[in-house]
Length: 387
Ligand SMILES: [Zn+2]
Image (cartoon, rainbow, N blue to C red; front, side, top):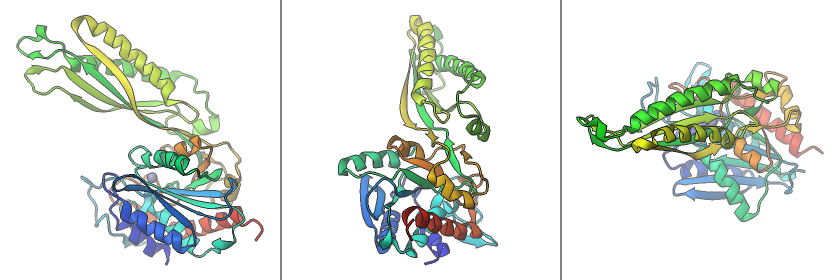
């Protein structure tokens, strides 16, 4: 099979994160089995599973190739062609996930089909994850699943997210915070009898703005080379959703804010959350006499990635990379979770993140073939060093 055919097959599975993806997982599992690998499927919830495939002597000196199987939604986007049918126009292949990140899955599958995998000196492992796009849930579950069956992972991982073949050894994390404001409901003709939770939320937004200014002005204590590569060289807070009130003529007694925090490589989301909690507590204290309150909690944390410079994988990828330096990606990946298991990841793959998640997402045809050659080369050099 060539990578174009494989990518067409993969794009045809509409694996938007809110849908099941077991059919796509079965396709990938079958190809890995055909390549001689031992395949395990770990079901996390109905319709959702991770695929783990191994071959070669088990040790930590091998190589992990990791990618996510889910894609972002197409609803509300203006596509020029069916997003779940790979469409070649000129030198580009269009389709949802063509770039992020089914191109890597297709290229890897085809590369492994052609390699003599029965002669590995070091272990090769594939980890295909679910629900990366909605908070890296699959890779987090995979660590628990591996704990249960007692299997380890190689110490180096390639995560084939779209970086236009730039090496990224770091990226910010993403922590989702929920702030709940509570007041007292009343008829809006008698506002004095109530306390508006939406008004409390407005105070919290002001306080979050001040915290954002403080964070932007602080010394970040992050490797300057990594900081330089990030579009925003400080932790970012974004209130992305607000839900408050039930009717226009009722003083609202509840308002919820969802706030995204992008902590920098090497920073803990929990530590910055403590500062958010302190500001929420101080706003709550001001409103307490009027029966108002507010509280904050962490809904989930996708950790940041910070792989040391100069890993063996960086050395192997350098001849194929568009730049000699390993920098930082702006987006979060499964690499943050893998780091919790001691895995050092480099994010490197075909396509550009600039066209991902948008209508008419595409990957250049030549990059698909290049990716197959790169995977083939690094598997040979890492896992068959005696050959
Ligand atoms: Zn992705």
